[in-house]
Image 1 (cartoon, rainbow, N blue to C red):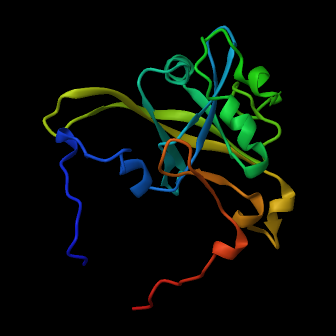
Image 2: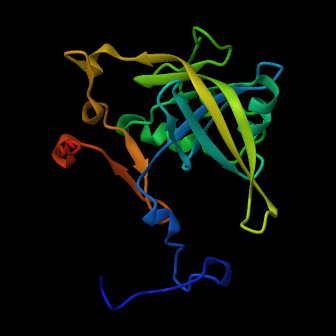
Length: 207
């Protein structure tokens, strides 16, 4: 362990030019979430707090820091889509995070194509090579250690259908690196890209 340590308590401030929390917990997969309201108006937005939480059934989740259109839509419909953000779709993904009103369709804003899902009513991004169709299992408002509620909500959904471009299946195994997914890192504009050169293998120890 190094002796020279920067220590801080988050409640008292970090004392740095940029909060390091997002850089330390990262890079993180991007929750590129498609949703729609009760009138069928579409919404597409990226969330940097996203991950998978269970195998069987598969459950994914994202956190809405503040009450966003995605959260409002999902509360009403109980459905959402997740779409893989790749290097070739990075600019379009970035356009979809513009702070616009609920009447604005981010598919149009980012030049993307909504395509019908198979199980849920919410469309997926046609240009994305991988998409999940999800049905809500829980929506949890987060709270501090002292139980005080904060304006952030964890949205969990069961993956009820999966779409994978066949060129990403090599001998039946999904090729993570070939998809070139992008991930959110630290700093106000830092992203990372997964590639084959970054891969290493490590098997679990046998007891």
